[in-house]
Figure 1 (tube, rainbow, N blue to C red):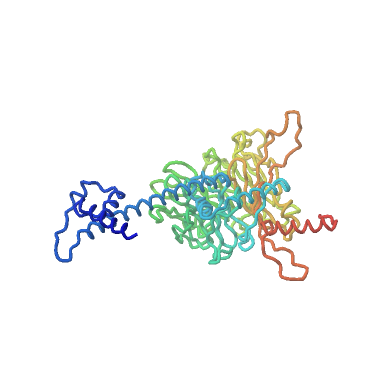
Figure 2: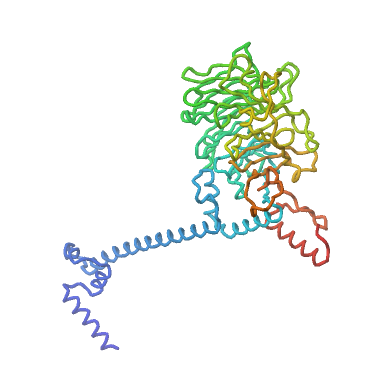
Length: 579
């Protein structure tokens, strides 16, 4: 091998001499790096001197530049490959999950979508959807469980967020949470303890409303008079202000002026500007006038443009009307509610009918003879100082006692929601005397079904179209008997109710002319509300035979399902009948 080595060293020296003293290794690296001849010609050669080495300079500079370019190209390749992989993962999860939130632009759904993107839930979603299908085939509806109903108590306020599937719920124990019933999951939690449980706030939220068109901003008012704006994108607390000395019993958003209007037990009426975070208007009944010192119970906004009308209910069984324009807040008139205090006031879709749900008023403030409560329908175009007799269109008075299954329910109507009918009419759904009662308000306005009574100044008798018990099948048999305590309509078809059991249920409104089967098939009468989904509190598994502590997994989850399946297999193998 020695002759070959000497021959290679000679060839290397000849190559270096032929190219101006540049070794062949440098030429090879220049060719691989793509260095142009002009760049090599423009580069000055260092002067020869003590310690100078032409070969060392020519070798080191091109080598360092090429490594930087290779690293940059490698980073670009990694980014391109990673981006393509993320697109494939997202496309696969969209296919497997089939969640509306992927195509939704609602800000309040982003926490759920972020959680789905952070961890791959495609197979878990498949399992959850299959389990939900099994539940619907077996019992007609899906059922999930939440520890907030166990620790936080029953839901008292339900606020739809506008997408038809997501609602904000306020429990009596203080927590505030966003729930998506189609997913059967909690989107976010607020006002909870450090451990995320149901106990964390010192008071409950009494009123809620959406403060943005997309449903991403939620306003809440609690028992201590604090108004809080929640950014549901986080979720996080955007603004907090204590506006009242008493509990906030009325909270509405004025979209045209981007302001919140609040009413409270301290009798004050305030207008809070969201942009400047200041109170721009406030008032209360003047001393020695009607309503002075009377706590407020309900609030609704009527009118369009700069001229607004605020309807404020009180515990004295009256509805005060305030107007707001460039001159501020002014008292206009008072509507009598037959010694029943308004518990909820809503404007119909036509904009001129006010629907008021009432319950018995304070005996001290109403003269010692409170009414039974029920439902009132006013025409705000006929407001006058005569007590509202001419403005009252129709009235429904409760019986004054609960049904047999709900004998301890509060009298009157404790909550109400308005829903559009299939033919464009307005339907009022009220939690009255332990049941849900539906009233067709358009039949009253036309005077087609009901007869006027002279004692009520020409007002028509308003009778419900149907009654439905939402607690008999799933929450019955308990003591004290539960009753529906909150109701909301997410869209034309679905109704969300809450009971004191506690539970949260989603019902689908059935239609008489709904297509089913062939044309000659006579379908049996369907219930007015069909249960679609139910959220119940966590249950403890039965204790073991050895008397050990009961398991704390929620009934209906994967672990409980496996446990029940094994129990059924054991019973079948022993020739036992499973009830």
